[in-house]
Amino acid sequence: MGDFDEGLGTVYERLVMNDIFDRLMETFSIKNVLEVPVYGMTGLTGINSVEFTNKGCSLTTVDNSLERIEESKELWGLIRPNERIKFCYADGFSELPFKDNSFDLVWNFAALWHIEDAPSLIEEMVRVSSNLVFISVQNNRQIGYYLRKYLIDRKLFTEVHETWLNLSLIRDLLAKNGTKIVEQGVFDIPPFPDIAMPISELFTKVGLRRGARRMGKGDTQRKRWKWNIVDYYTGKDPQLNKRLRKFMFIENSPLPSRLKALWAHHRYILAQKGIR
Image 1 (cartoon, rainbow, N blue to C red):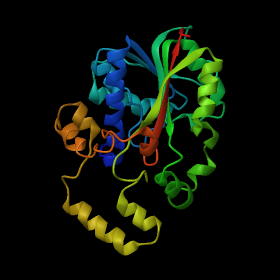
Image 2: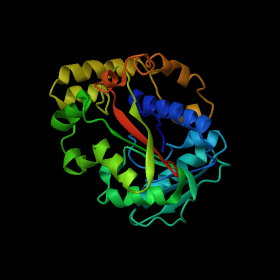
Image 3: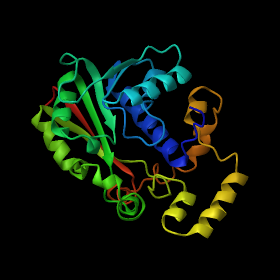
Image 4: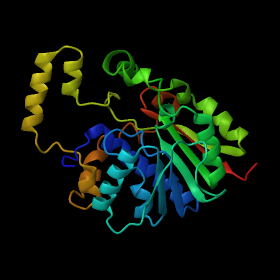
């Protein structure tokens, strides 16, 4: 591990997620959290839930890749060396190794379409939660999604299950397993499209090599254009959040959700147990 620069897009979505987590912790009594699985976010693996630990929550993470778990442990050792995080390995997600009602919040980020048996995972998420289940998915109604699917990253779409971007289907499964949907919406709405790569790499992908070289030179000249979430979390770059806020003018605008949904990179659903 050396370069922790994830790029603007990934750090943007991390900090927007942190805002959502802060709001959930202010609204609900959340003391212990389970993230299952930990993959889905581009960039660094396994540190999606740092904000919960910042506010005193205990954290357990589960994944089916030992490599991802080891990477996650190493990153947590840098970010929160004294934090006691539980890292659990599972062959699959149809039988999580926890008792019923073990966690106040169970969640994942953009992970569902990677999972063969998503209905079983959703059922297990509900079972081990005592209160909340939060699921986010990629927004397949925005332009960046189609750029990635048909131009930039076609191979990815042969390896995922696009069915599980259907929020209505997820909502029905959550309801079937005894929860009530308390919130649904969109987030991650920066002014740039969701291409999941540097713009210079995009130029190369589409055959515009001159543009790629020009952007590459610009990237070299702009050495300060770094988006390092590890430096932010460890206090080495405390101004990162402030620098990034200037890109949130669409996110924080009063535009209705139906309009934001045309550009938002992700959608989410929040379900709660034990209410009617």
